[in-house]
Image (tube, rainbow, N blue to C red; front, side, top):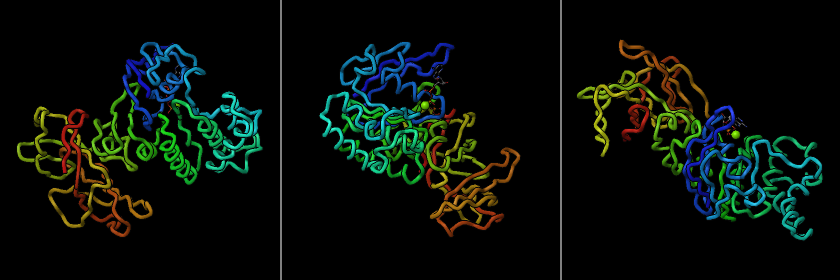
Length: 362
Ligand SMILES: Nc1ncnc2c1ncn2[C@@H]1O[C@H](COP(=O)(O)OP(=O)(O)OP(=O)(O)O)[C@@H](O)[C@H]1O
Ligand SMILES: [Mg+2]
């Protein structure tokens, strides 16, 4: 278990890299930290590892207050963004290094290193030095070194960023299986939303040193708390469209939609509210016949996604709204022809007031 209490890090020069973060990561949990470049992910990990001293706040690992402990006494294994491995040792020695520190007998060390290396497709490289490895290979060595021992926590900072698409997918599945097997509390930093969704039990979405939303992958995907989270999650970004409420309807990009259902507990919407209508491209159906409750547009781009096609519609400008682009994902073969008119019908959507989630529709 890792507990952060009111953790704040202000770097000399005044950057608030972490801003009053309170968070508990459960025993054995796979926790992903997701956010854009510079939001504080590495700083958070380094503070847990003991490589940064917090300006304020405390860090507990398994009920021990480690805030003042040096990194070596925190029993965590960290894989850095720049995967620092020892240049003077070969791959086998690098992987076995933490076991050597723990005084594990030589034969057991070698066997363990060989086993982990095999699982990360490193067997043929065991006797090479880091300088003779590609970036992706070095990264896998760093990962293997971290998982060769059984620490209280794994701290992974973008450990798969240098792997090609196939290896990355393989390493991802391997990591998830391994983490289940060992049940070691894991904090995994990534700016790849698909990786976070695939791996994590819970995800925290960060922006400028703060946690914007913490939840399960399903929570974060289906009910992003703010338009920032909404725009960050999903393999094709969510359509976020300005919306206007009247007494009888919701007007969005040329479509007249039914009034949203009342949202329990929240103050009712009014025509003066600043509203954003969010709909994922996967939740839009396309039709070539006119419907008033659909977004009208002309097909302006078609992108092949393999089994699906990403269709970009350009909605016409009206007196009220400028022309906008709306994207829909449809099964291959179901896309209308380039340049033709089409209507996008929403199946499920989210309504945001002042960029904060108000109602889920559908
Ligand atoms: N040693 C430092 N001194 C001053 N500012 C720093 C230092 N390290 C990081 N920062 C700043 O703190 C903020 C958070 O940096 P951090 O490295 O934690 O971001 P990140 O989320 O890991 O980004 P990335 O995805 O690019 O790795 C940034 O604004 C960064 O410029
Ligand atoms: Mg970083």
